Amino acid sequence: MSFFTKDHTRRINKWLLPAYILWSCRRIGSYDAVFLNSGWFAQSIWLLYFFRIFYPKLKVYVIHHHFRYQEMSGIKRQLQYMLEWLGLGVSFAIITPNPYTHSLIKQMRPDSRTVFLEMAFKKDVPTCSCYVLKQLLFVGTVYQRKGLLYLLEAIGQMSEKERSGIHLDIVGDLSQKKYYKCLLSLVHLYGLEDIVTFVGRISDEELRSYYSRAYCFVFPSLLEGYGMVLIEAMSYGLPVIAFDNSAIPFTVKNDRNGILVRNKSILDLKKAILKLCVDTDYHRKLCDGALDTYRNARSLSDLDIDIENFVIKELIN
Image (cartoon, rainbow, N blue to C red; front, top):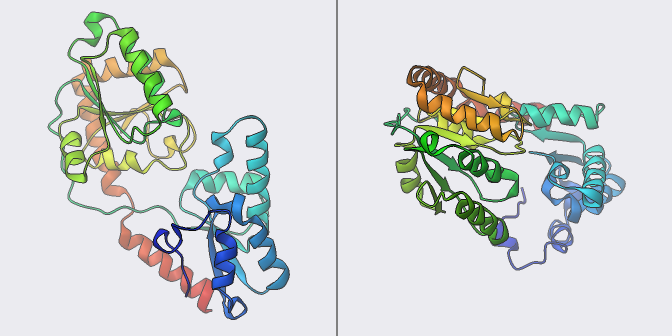
């Protein structure tokens, strides 16, 4: 077995990485299979075709979590779509961990061979939040795809009476400075300095403390391949308010464990937040649904069994 981590490759230009891997795997002809991440398509598409032409018996598995072209626009979107179309098509099989991406693969490449190894989670005993009233929480990298502009607009358009007592903690990496400054300007425009706190990146222990006092989890993402953070929030019994797009409705079930909002609708997002903050009985119902979702989520032992079966079926038999 040969593998390459960031420790092996951090000093190598990413565009030269496939060549480095090929050079390091000089005994490639004796291998039964190669596993590649689809995030490398831009750099490694030629490597896939090299394997197909010179090692036709080699099984090339592509691990595909989400379609990157969906995040792009214009010519970049078209080029990335073509890369993904070509890369998935030349692979022996495609491994994907989530049902949303699995369905998209079947649309893009209906004749492709796919292996569905569904996402799983470390299952601890649920630690319920103490549900501080009107304490909203977002967790994730702060950049355009996460849709935080819509969330700040929704709070900003509330009346003084409606936003009274509401507080939003935004937890996550703030390295996208241009977008972060745009969010700050919106906070200043609506006078939300005492309502919105940009926490930044924190330790796991600190993150647990934020989950443990939140009232609900607000996730206005515009695109998700899965959204693992949704299950993480539900493990604390937090109902989720999110836009109805991409993979999100595979996890968030409207009126059961959260509220699905019409995509990019600031008004509907505002209404959902206010509804949950005012109707505590409804909130309690969604909290119970969130915990049920977490309890029923797949565990790592489930995934271990699937991987074992995959190895036996695909690589041994």
